[in-house]
Image 1: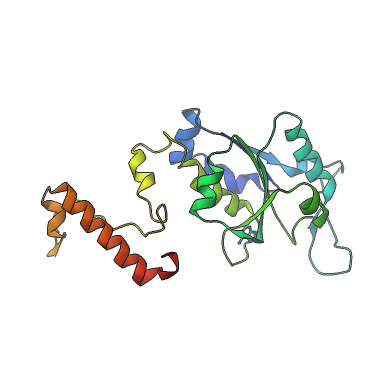
Image 2: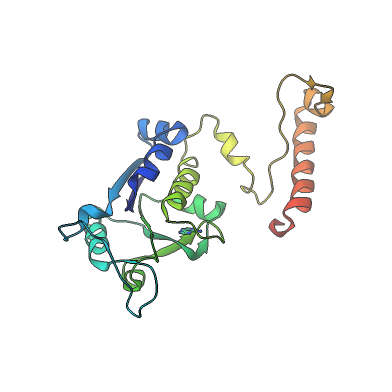
Length: 223
Ligand code: ADE
């Protein structure tokens, strides 16, 4: 899979995309992630990519031309399954969107900034608009990092124990069961006995009951 991220602030993304699981997935050749500085596509001598909005509102808007150039130059090299724009007014990102995006070959993520991008780009070039939640960030870079992380860890081979991606919270519309590790007793706090019993089937059953109980209590909307 290949993810191309277009942004005015690549430095926000660099560290998060080059550590831990995302770094390893790239080293293993499971995913290629490229950051493109939108200013590199500006025709302006000061590398400007924004301008004042028509209509006189406050704030700045990312212009059509540099974004069109950046997307067109990528599209000239390969086909893209989706050109995603990160925006608080997009559809809300969730595990099933991550699952579907992880199956794609090539995606572009365009990070919004300032007041957003010229609306004509949304009408003509963007194929999908995604928000990571009902709050407003200063830009779409953190949203792009969140989405990339959630997508890449689903690519087979990206995480050591593939079972563990399948047993994540949300993967089956249930929250994950509680987990414990050694020691079995700490400050008098004990681990549920069933987990120490070695009885595989009973343990799986207990985990399912716990998942259902936690989902009912904490996220009944998922059921
Ligand atoms: N840009 C600003 N806020 C955002 C959000 N909540 N999701 C995605 N992109 C954003």
